[in-house]
Amino acid sequence: MKRIMTRYILTIILVALGLGCFAQAPMEEVIFLPSDEDFINPERGFVSNMYSDEVRLDKKTLDRLKANRESMVWRQFNLDEFKDSDISDKYLGQVRKDFDMIRKAGMKVIPRFAYCNRIGDDDASLKTVLRHIDQLSGILKDNADIIATMNCGFIGAWGEMHSSTHGLDKPDSMKIIVDALLDVLPPERTVQIRYPSAKAAMFGGRTEPITFEEAFSGKPYARVGHHNDCFLASPTDVGTYRTDIEAEKDFLNVETLYTPMGGETCNPRNGWPVSYDKTIGEMERMHWSYLNSRYSHAIMDHWVKGGYYDEVSKRLGYRLELQYGRYQTEAAPGAGLTVSFRLENTGFASPYNPRMVELVIVGKESGERYKVLLPQDPRFWFPGEEVEFTYTVGLPEDMAFDEYEVCLNFPDPMERLYERPEYSIRLANDGVTFTPEGYNDLGISFKVTDSQAPEHNTFLKFKKM
Image 1 (cartoon, helix red, strand yellow):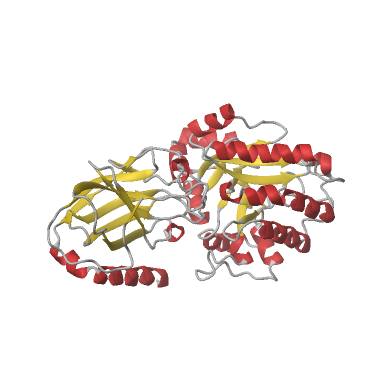
Image 2: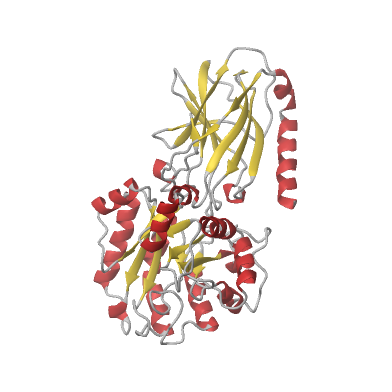
């Protein structure tokens, strides 16, 4: 209730600021239709878990993943030859090259580092792990903008935080490793852990999930997310839930509103059934953002045969659908332009990294472009919720008389990604065109004329691009 009231008050204030213009100017309404298309969008969807000692990343490989609508690579780096030594310069160079290739391809990465790929094999000592994190810190910092989230890794078989031969799966050691990774990454990035019960053990026994007020605050507790590497395989997801299954799922239900949830399925144990209701229900409950496309084929084949693989693919992460719009059809230079939109997030999750919301207008004849940053945070556009916002934005006084197309833009705020369309969110609507610049052209327009209108005084004003 609190977050809904906050949005409602904000809208009232902004409408009041431009009330005169809103009441006098001609307005038009539009109904937006949802799209059934399955398309690529950043930081969500199916991903391929690729081991560094099995698959080399090159342009052909990454182009194939993108053609399969994958916007991220779940990259597992094998450190088995460095259990008792520093990581070699050659290997560090290859890690950096992988990040460079992913950036060039316009994708993001979920990195994980591990020392062994079989239960019972040795991992490394805590001292070695911390030394390796220090060695990797430069690469991780330089590429934090293309890191969607990071698995804790380093601990036990496959870096899944179990079966450590050096006791790294104990709460104190886990906390030290997670803290070291959080210190390397910027405050808006998260580190995922394997078991929900481990978070309480790491943070002094706290069993309360992240609160609305803590969300995206940069505090350590708010930056620890979750992954599940045996999803749908048994009642406990093969040990993912260790104490009280329903209580831990309730905990994740809240936590994953504010942190990324991902992982992979496993082959079902002892005839454990897979069904539509269980699959979709669990993904809705735990707000899944990404899932390994390469395993388990047994479960994915069941989804295909059951006819709901496409629904999983489209709903992983966020899926933003405009429903309704109301906009001013004419305005004068220096006056205000009023627009109103309602959208719904029909995905399983919200965007979990910072995301900008820009209103962009483009002159049909002049080609002149103007933009304004709207005070919206898509990380709080929760799944299953409708979001409404109304703004009146001041137009420049020297604006050319022209007809202007109206667009919404959801770019990545990181400097090196901001102007790259691969990192902008596409809306899931028929009749809305995703432009080469990464804008969502809404198919509506307004005219700037020489009509008389009072100058618009508000903190929101278009700036020429």
